[in-house]
Structures are given as C-alpha cells and as structure tokens.
Amino acid sequence: MAKSSGYLSPSWDAIYEAVLRVSLDIKKKRKEFEAIIALARGGWVPGRLLSDFLRVKRTLSLQITSYKDQEKAENIRLLDQDFKTDARSVLLVDDVSDTGGSLMFARDFLEKLGIEEIGSATLYIKPWTSFVPDFFYQSVTDWVVFPWEFAEFMAPNVRRFAELSRSIGLSPSISSLLEELIDHDDDD
Image 1 (cartoon, rainbow, N blue to C red):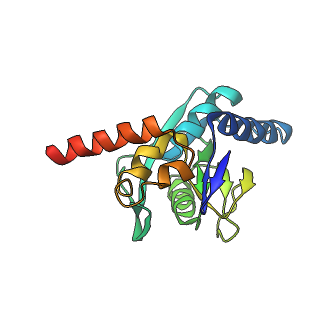
Image 2 (cartoon, rainbow, N blue to C red; image 1 turned 90 degrees about the vertical axis):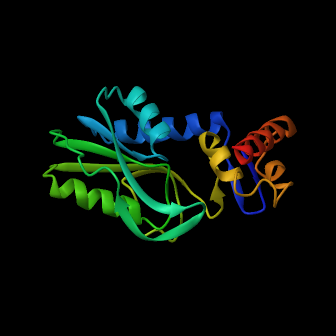
C-alpha cells in the first residue's frame, strides 16, 4: 500500500484483503442480507466484491452527492429520486466513512422506505467520522485514493502537482496517459 504526503493509495491486493476481512467479519457475526445497496460511486466496487464474497446476488445502487472534486459540498442530496426496493434486510456499502454524512443520509432514507434491517460496511473510516459502520476494515487519517478513482482524483491536480502521481504510487506511463487524456478533453 503506497502512502505518503497525506495520501493512501491501496493496491488491488489491499482492496481484496479489506473486502475479504469485512466479509469474514459479517459471516462470523452470522449476518445475512437480502440485498446490497452500494452508494454511488465509491461503494460500487466494494459492494460488487461483497456481493460475490457473501453470495448476495441482489445489488442496488443509490446515488448521493456530497463532494465537488475533493471538497465537501454544502449539503447532501439524493440524486436517485425513484429509488425503490422491497428488500427487508440490506447491507449499505461505501468505500470510506469520512464525516459519515452520506451514510447517515442514506440510512435515514432507507429507514423511511420501511427497510427493517440496515447493516453498513465500508473499507475505511476516519477517526472523526460521525457514522461508524457496523463493519469496516481500518481507520485511517490520510485521503484515500482508490484504484478505481485515480482519474477522478488526478484530473483536477495533474498539471498543478506533477509529483502527485508518484506520491500515490502511479507509474510514470499511467500518469502520462492521464495527462494526454486531459489534454484531449481540453481540445474538445
């Protein structure tokens, strides 16, 4: 796991280990869920992996927004106004519980839908979070840059911070391709 400059960039192996440990914790506590609801977009990959490891075939996505680039937005909003489910027992999944606001918002929304049991899981939590999920892998203080979001993370920073890609463990060739992609976007 690459770590420096206040950033944590877990490898795919580290992600698999984190999800497997969360899965084992859920199994040891004999928890079973009818569906997994992944918060879009950060919870998609952990939710998908958890669905495999826990053998939960029903997966749903709930889209909430609370960030603009890497800054917290003023308010949390539900973008998926038509979300519905008849599942009575769900596992709410996200990648990290930073402030905890998105997870609390989602849990409250799901409770209003009448879901009887709502478990929660993330890979990481921050020590200052106001929402500690039922299941999580590790507490960290660094900004976590997941392998599935490096383009999102790097795009606003690639020109300002040339060394940033090295600090999160990207190879020079990946960084170069990302810069080329951004240059191509600027031409459009």
